Picture 1 (cartoon, one colour):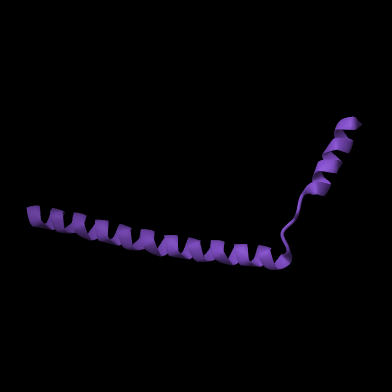
Picture 2 (tube, rainbow, N blue to C red; picture 1 turned 120 degrees about the vertical axis):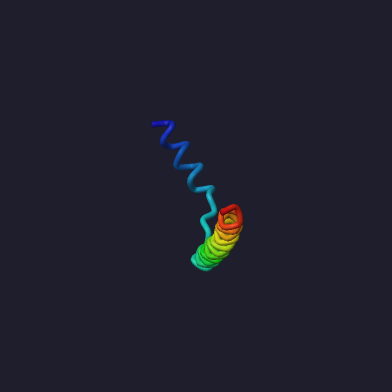
Amino acid sequence: MQFLREVRQEAQKVTWPTRRETLISVGLVMVMVVLAAVFFFVVDTLIALVIRFIIDFRI
């Protein structure tokens, strides 16, 4: 029981983010996901072009 009381006391000390802070964080995460996806798409395409050029060049 003492453990549960201590957990409750510690939980009351937590400062939860506001709705606005949460929405801003979610927005930033979504932007970073899109940027990462575009970056990896471009890198993958460039690597595929280089490999295709090397294979076609040798034949």
